[in-house]
Image 1 (tube, one colour):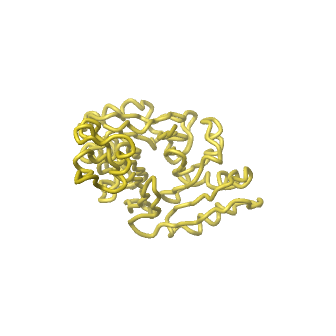
Image 2: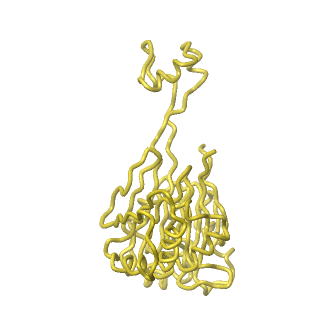
Image 3: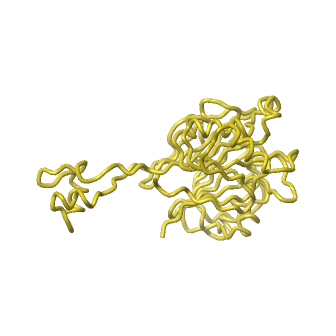
Length: 301
């Protein structure tokens, strides 16, 4: 059975706390696993969450601040130690190639796995597969940062009552799907578009065009909300979002399920992030992320 869910491995910004690890997020998308922003301690958090190195097909790094990338060394070495049998692809800003190289070869180990480096230098598609297209969009942060968006291709939903009205049954259902028409009946007459699901991952950034483009129409949006609204000036100065800013971006983009994360250690009450997000007018599903939380991608409407 296919599984589409987010496994939250860490939710802290800048430094880990007693209750929050550095960043780390695994998206399970049917038979693939995409690991986003593995900060320090991600390998241990994977163990606690029941995530194996064999589950990883891609690693996506938004930028090379330590809380988003220090775990790369351990994760890459674990992939090789466990001799993952399939190719693993790493995406990261090309401008940070020297940091990726240092982390990939931080210590001595035996390379056994084909790790493909696929750095990001501009907006646009990074990978196109039958299951999804993975895109990157530039964000606004003191170091170059990219957000990622996964889009499933649209499909078609067959309508039984219309098929029956035209006497289309059995193998002919598959035939009209393949050929686009049958005995003068077009596919559009007996089916409707099934919109592909959409996921986006937005980390350290100010509000910018990239945030809105990534969030547009998402079923599940994971977005940083480092600061509360009363510290908006501080957020802007350091290249971050507040809870209210993130929520308004999600509201305007029509996001179905919003996941807030990447919280500053200065705040002791995580529920305040939810209160401010609701006050900003976001009325969809909302999760204030905690370490080891699992968030399913919303079911199709």
